Length: 262
Image 1 (cartoon, rainbow, N blue to C red):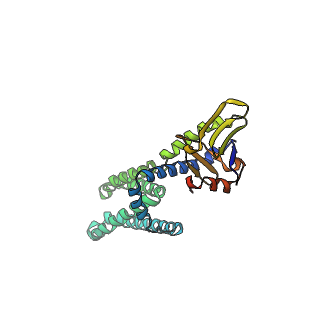
Image 2 (cartoon, rainbow, N blue to C red; image 1 turned 45 degrees about the vertical axis):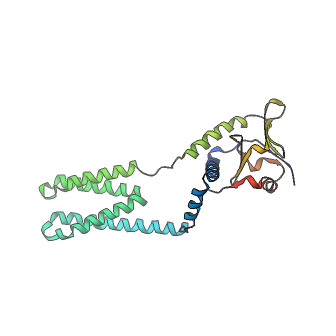
């Protein structure tokens, strides 16, 4: 088995690889937390044993609840206007209409907020026009229409955006710093039985070495290896390994290897 592993630093697609770096940093944080608080993590692992529904089951559940929410909302709105126009004859249906509308809003807010925004804006326009133009008979529809417009705006303003975590920000900062190494010619990261070395050949002042004993973890993702040592981390691409092999590296640092997946 090889006792020397050399990575040549090369350009990388930072946008594509940032999720992997973020995942790696999160894995490192979890490992450190496990080391400091083993009792808490034993409880967490026990709770995680509860099986989670497969992705396909969750997808079907989401679709089914979206359809049910849409049906509830449409039925509730369909009977609401006739109830307002003839409260004496249809007033007993008002609770059913309100429950159906609010049930639809709850489901659509959770699963299809954009669709709820569109429906709310359309119904707001219809209710406001009817309430404003039809006089006292439908006057109550005007404030309800305004409420629907507010709901539609709330949906648009709170639509889910890609969540940026602290790990994402740290990954971006780390990869931004790495861009400096990409501009260097013949930059290498070497792992041996004695030490870790980051150097630029033919430039003695561009060399950083620490004992291998300071290597805390080697985090592996789909395309990357991230050695964490002496409160530092270096992002290495698997394809840049020019001396040794990945299976040999995994075996060499098996006691410190942490594998992650998105």
